[in-house]
Structure formats: structure tokens, C-alpha cells
Image (tube, rainbow, N blue to C red):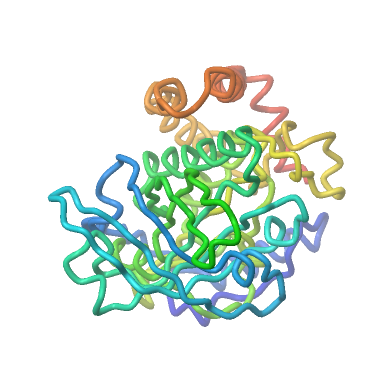
Length: 362
């Protein structure tokens, strides 16, 4: 159906007769739902490899890292990269801070960044076809712990890549930041680049929904939304919302296809437990480590299908943390234990009823 026909329902859960009425309206508005699969294409060269990319970025530290205003301007910078063949490239680009919490958190020395490339300059480089890219940074210069948080969030993107092509690709980068005015020492840290949202949609043979109109989660493809919500529960992330487009993007193939939600930004997930991550007070959770299923009512068969799909990939998922060479042993062990708790939960009927089936009673 045409995306414009999807009705905007108020965010948040409702109870009683109102809830039933909303579900009836939603069912009428969204039928007939057509099961049309997204077809994933080849990843761009930048995201086709897993090895860390070594980069140097020369920029004026103070006007870039110090810009925490609501509206930020791009500042000039130069990115240096040596290709596998030994060719050296110097790319002019604009760079600015982005985000919200990490941007305004006073202890974040280098907040997340956005890179704006010049299309003609990137031809023939690993950045060919790229325009604007998000860069997840290490935040604190003097804390190795924050470097470990970067690796953990990167691996959460990799998990979701294992589950579905309707996900954001990432590329780990080792960046040396050089102050072009030589007032600050150079900094070498790991971060990762995130696939542009339009390129993600194109790779899936789809288009991004640009409108910010509210679209209820139940107006999206049902099986895909079930998988998304169970994944978010698995990693302990409650910092997302479809209706509000909070850390979620929506894509669709054409006017007759279902909408598919694609999540991003996992730094508040309980599996990572960054020091600035706190649960929404309305959820009444003690910490982000405490899981809460944020999905909607599903049948036992629907839950079983999602659980079975995740069980099939259990060893692949756990091995991402166990075998990632840059992740320190204590973080790898803590993360795998957190994931193993999830698998224990979905294997125990009583726990499934408590954690998932009870959502049908809300």
C-alpha cells in the first residue's frame, strides 16, 4: 500500500478498549499487506572488507571538536589514505560534530563526527561512491575503556548484519587525528564508519522514507519487526522508537511493499553499559543491564520463529565477541555471558512467558 496511507498512531502503549480499537484501525489501514522481500545488492568497496582501515585526518581541533552548538557548520579538513596497492590519496572534506548525548556530554573529548566528501575526489579510492558518512569516535582520549566501548558497539552492528541485509554496514577505522595548527598533540584511536542511510536503502533495492510523520511499529513488516525487537532485547537496548524515528530508519521498495525498520546507534545497550547510559525512568529499570522487551504482542509461533533464527546463528554471534582481536578478554567475556543469558531465557518456557508473552497483557 502507499506509504501515505499508513496512519500515525500515538507513540506509547495503550490499554483496554482503546488498545483493541487502535489495533483494529491499524489492521484495516494496512491491508492488504504484501510480502515482498528486499533484495540486497553488493556493498560499496568501503564496506566490503572487515580489516581496519588506516586513515589520517588533518583538521583544526578547536573549532571542530569544540563546536557543540545545536546547528554546526562543516570545517575544512584533509583525509590521507594509502591504498592496498600503495597509492596515496589526500582528500579534501568537510567535518563537523554530530549526535546529541555524546556531543553534549562534557567528558567527551572527541564526539561523533560527520564527514562530507567531494564526489569527484573520491573516484578511484576506497571512498568511491561515498558522500556523507557518520564516524563513531572513541569519545575520551585518556580512557582505554572507551575504546572498548567502540569495539562492542561495532560488533552489535555486525550481529545485526548477520541477521538481515536490512541493516547498516560498518567499517572499522584506525584514525590519527592531526591538529593542522599544531596546538595539540596528535591522537591515534579506533572508530568506525557507518553506511549512509540512502546507500543502505539502495543496497536493499529500497528507498528511505524521508517524512517524519509518525508510523506505528505495527504498520511495518511484521516478521522483520519481531526480529528487530527480539534483537534489541537480546543486547539490552531500549533506546529506540519507530514512531519517533529514534535510532531507527524506515525503508520501502515501492508503494505496494511493506515498510521495514532498520535500527542503529547501540551505545546505550546493556551489553555495553557505557557510563552515560541510563534507562528511561518510565521503564522503571534499575540499569541498562536489565532487559525489557519493547515489542508488541506476537503468537507463540512468531516468537518461536525469531528465537529459532537466532539460535541458528548463536555460535556466529558469540564468536564475534570471542574472536575479535581488539576486544580485551574481560569485555569479551562479559559480553558473551550477557548473550548467553539471553539464549538461556529463550530456551526456558517459563522465562519466555515472563519476558515476552506478558506483553500481550499490556
